[in-house]
Length: 120
Image (cartoon, rainbow, N blue to C red; front, side, top):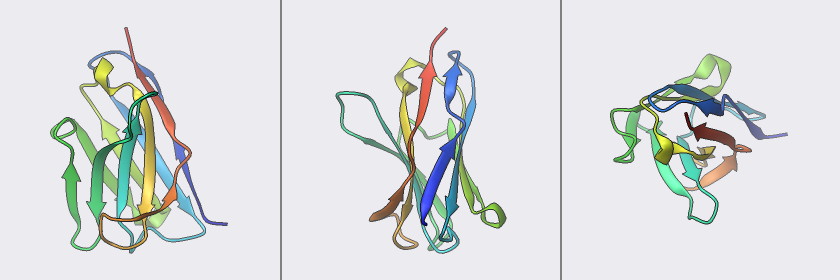
């Protein structure tokens, strides 16, 4: 069974850091792009970042640039999103997604979501 299981969300104080994990099973991330999105209730899902496997390039939304870092460990079939300097605007449910190809494009598998709450 192909699935993506996320972990690592939680409550963090403003200015703090958090790392989200995204473990794939039943398929390999080796030839797939990995993306992160986030969503706040009542708002549309927002793109956060993508690791384009095609050429190993990273892309970030403006709000994530300089604060968030994507990485992956192919040996563990896992991707990560390291978030720092968090603020209340970062409070959301974060979703990991594995693309159908090595391009940042169509998502084939979604993680279940990780709640990130930034509050004093």
